[in-house]
Image (cartoon, rainbow, N blue to C red; front, side, top):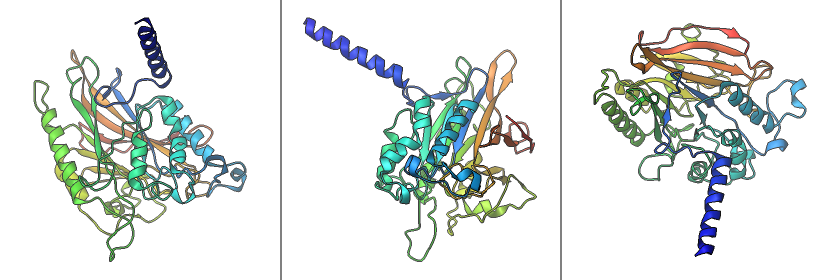
Length: 385
């Protein structure tokens, strides 16, 4: 009996040690995302890391003065800098996390690519791009590996139920102790936009399929019903933010007069318009969409009440533009302060980008959506960190 007790005590000690080292698991059921005590929730978007083999992987499209010693490790350092500076509540990797053709071991490349998020202990998620499966793991295998990593809230949907391997949603609840502490006041949707068309007569990139749109519609309706029921019922749905890799054809709707940021290359969407933009408009809760894929586009533009935003190229082993700094997008939602009640519903959703320069310069600070105005109100700024 004493040996059993000693053995049990040893197991408990080991478990406690593991918890101390790794922190609490990012389980949306046991540890739901929620707004901080200051009424803020911040998301860091990391688009197109294109991580391959670490130190041996050279940088692309940088100035000659930057080329020596530049590798995947510059991408890793940038992720660390962004986490340390912005201290996000959630990190979102929006595809092409690894660059399959140059990655000799997909699992190892992913472990290293996501290591800054893992070591930070901050909840993080990832969706797939068109290059993630081009190494030693299938698309299904890549997503299965991701969901097995520490602190991730990524989810895997088995093949056959919904097209793709990473269609899921996360709820962000109100502040602890508030009347909305048990309601999702901000809804996050993540979709697998696929890689390349499998239809012989259609060339180019894939698109969001009908099964995924049905899943989105059902999920949106369920969340809206839960939000508007009960004593804390609200008339308008909680705002929703959507993340996927390949931009929709509607991203081509803008010119320099109606977007904030830069458009320096054609929109590399699918040639097929599957109607997902219309599906989001009809759902009524989506306020902004965030994509990657086109590395030297970093703009946000509003169409029919929805902001369409690029993350901007992040990774150093990804094509870019020499002299045009790698960048990351930050999205922050702020709750409304209600006198005598505390924090209420989401009041504004804002965004800005940081450049990977000496000061992590902030650019294009703007309001994406406001409860009081319904749409965006631009406020362009450029300033140092």
